[in-house]
Length: 333
Image (cartoon, helix red, strand yellow):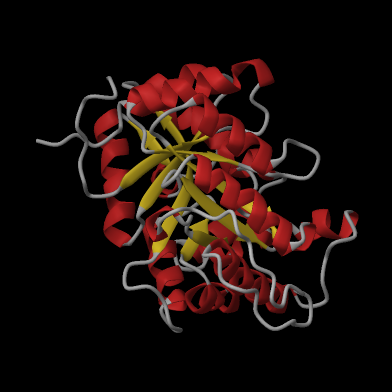
């Protein structure tokens, strides 16, 4: 599949650059994703791994077309003025190719780093409001409880309004998702993002003022193979943690939520939980199976309201997995 081929306009399809991808493969991975026709590549920022802004800058410079998303930058980890300066510079140099994800950060990581606020919700609302103003070249808002940038103006901003990067909030809770509707351009939903979870999240988002068609980016573990059983086996380890409390918001909207909780309680650990999970649940909680089945799973997420569906490669060799994942890209008739 080549970059010149045409894909369905129903929604964007992206791929995640895994946090543990060997450094010498980073450019090859990004360039191959672009060559195969993916619309987006997303970088992550997890404590102790690689920085999100540095990765985004490197991928943008190594490619020519593909949109680069950062998912996510923890609000408590960076001064909003300097975050805006970094993002505005990237948007100037690579107009229209950046999406900025902001979130609370994992609570334990933020406590370990000394950056967990007393009110994460207040912080992210202030942060997103200020960041969007600053990226547009407007003065920073009145100082708040956490964010202080009143009157700050960034002079080096994108040349046109269309080049200002969307700011999406990578959050799970109903109140935080409602805050995204009030203060951001949309949502980033971590994996698993089944259609029912997308629908529930959009309900929270639309409880407040929101763009007419918000950005809704979803992550899902993915494995594509003509041998469906091989794909299922490859993706199961990526689901080992979803029975834990932190993922409750993702699971609650599903029709089998109670059964999944009972299954987790009956299993000795996450590995046993994922390996013995019914195949029907695995299919709902990931992008998995033959190319046709995976394509259908992507389409169901677009139909639920996702503007971008991001595939998280499952298995030990992410670079090798790219070609098989590309088989699930929707094609125009």
